[in-house]
Picture 1: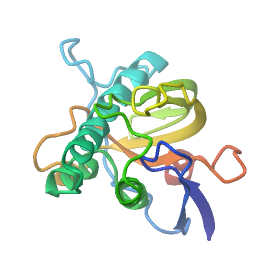
Picture 2: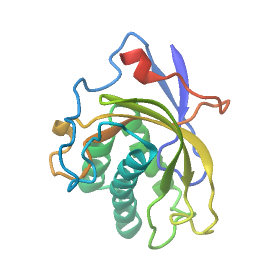
Picture 3: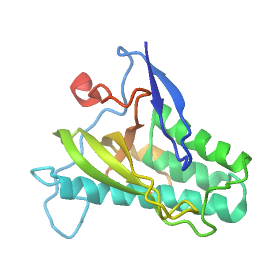
Length: 199
C-alpha cells in the first residue's frame, strides 16, 4: 500500500490521504481518438506538447471553477456540484475534490473570493505523454480563487486519462481527459508515474 497525500479543491493547504494498491486498476481503460482537425482545441495532436496539455488543464480548471462558484454562491453542495466534479475526475481524486470542497464549506469558505475565478494550472514539466495517459509536473495558481489575491503557487503533479463518458452525463467536461491524480506527496517528492505503471 502506498499512502498519497492529495490536494482536492482546498485553497488553504488541505491534505487528504489516498490509499492505492498497485495491483488495482488505475482508472478507466481506453484511448483518446487522435485529432484530425484544428477546429477542436482539445483534439489530441500527434505530438502531445505543453501547449496542448495546458489547454486541457484550463478546460478542466473551468469545470472545477464552475463547481466552486456554485458552492460559493449557494453555500451548499448540490447535485450539480457533484456532477461537475465527477465529469473531470475519477476514483480517489474525485472523492478528495468533493471532500475538500465540503470541508471548506463547513469552515464557511473563509479564504474564497465572493466571485471566485478559476485556479490556473500550468505545466512545468511533461514526464510521460501517451494517447492513453499524461503525467506532468505543474504549478497551481489560486490567486483568482482566494481572497488574498496572492499567487499561492505550489508545485504539484497531475495524471490525465481518457474521459470515461459515463461519468459526464451532462457534458460538463469539454475535453477528452479527466484527472486520475491531482496533488502531491507529503514529502513534496515526485509521485510514482501511474502512466508507466498502467502501460
